[in-house]
Amino acid sequence: MRPFLSLIFLLILTMGYSQSKYKSILQTIDNKQGAYGEIAQQIWSYAEMGYQEEQSSALLQKTLQAEGFTIEAGVAEMPTAFVASFGSGSPVIGILGEYDALPGLSQQAVPYKVSNNAKAGHACGHHLFGTASVAAAIALKNYLQKEGKSGTVRFYGCPAEEGGSGKVYMTRAGLFNDVDVALHWHADSKNSASVRPALANKSAKFRFYGVSAHAAGAPEKGRSALDAVEAMNNMVNMMREHVTESTRIHYVITRGGEAPNVVPNFAEVYYYARHKTRDEVTKVFDRIVNAAKGAALGTGTTMEYEMIGGTHELLFNDVLQPMVQKNLETIGGYTYTTEEKAFAEKIAETLGEPLETKYVEGVMPYSENVKAGGSTDVGDVSFAVPTAGLRAATWVPGTPAHSWQAVAAGGTSIGEKGMIIAAKTLTLTGMQLFDNPKIIQAAKENFIQKRGKDFQYVPMLGDRKPALNYRN
Image (tube, rainbow, N blue to C red):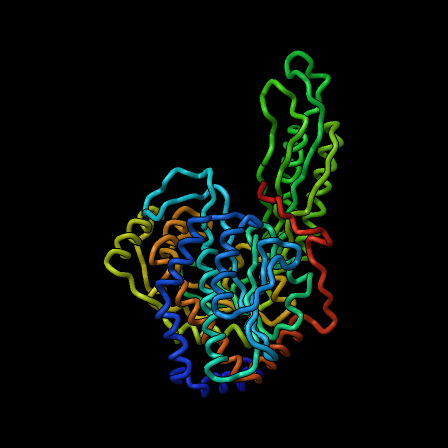
């Protein structure tokens, strides 16, 4: 154990996890599990994509307002973003919540695939994320009231995490400047609070403009925008041999023409570049831009690109993250009912592996060596304020994110039970932070040490306004 953490762990161990004042507040979350489940399932049914989450955002705002929170809506130039606050003074504990769905992943809450992929679906569990975080914010509000403590609970309604970088605009707008600690969580197939890196990310839509002509009668008069997209893709794919091993590049052709006998005068391709460091992402992205320029030159077309998203890697806090792990272990997991187990076994069959519930009923051991997977705009928050989070078992073990199996489980009591685990863990952590300013101070010291005293925040997406139409 790092020497400077010994005092913190001593504090945590002597805080009395079994204190009745903590237990009674956590019990309020259990008591309202049915109500929170209804909210989550309502958002699951809305399945609104990034910056389109009007109903989802409104429902969460209404829930918090009814509990006495003050709402500031439409923050950072995003209509579906909001900040809900209760209390006054320090410390300020921020709770992050998301609620956007993914395109093309509509699915019923059944253990077999339903072909309805023209619509969106909650394949990353953000309906649970937003609801559980609201539950934690309300429980912390109750704690401040009951104990007569000063301090502020602040819920951040964060839209468009899936590629829209909503939290980046909130960070850029300074909405986290006075926050002492930010807490978050995410849906998963296991209960875990290990150090789980996230990749820095930069994304853009590349648009090519050509000249239409009859593809058979006058092909020499045409300049194909689709040819430019394909030429760009070929160059980027050749580039994959000459990037670092941990670099990730993905693309989809979003527009490729309207008919084979018409030379396309417009085509568009949507690119992501990822790496464990933002500096390397910037280098890779600049090479992708050069490939686009070369493709346009070679095909006689013109090109422009629009930055869509950009996120920092996650900066983990060595004080807060083990604390969240300890609290998750204290809360523990849950067991399946007979019906839930039958559902889970059928889902497991579609994943090609036997059902193993060890880390649904319990918690994975703490580790600092988990492999980086996707990206998250929580990364930018983590460079603005000491940040910590966890993952809760809202999906059947083995389920990958962004899959129909994730959507299905998220629409059942399995997802609801996992979200309650997350809500209680966030609440327990928040109560301890309100009670122990020395932990907050140590977390801030670790934060500055890891980020650097002279760090200057520069958003990866530059000074562009929120990409409100990126899902259109």
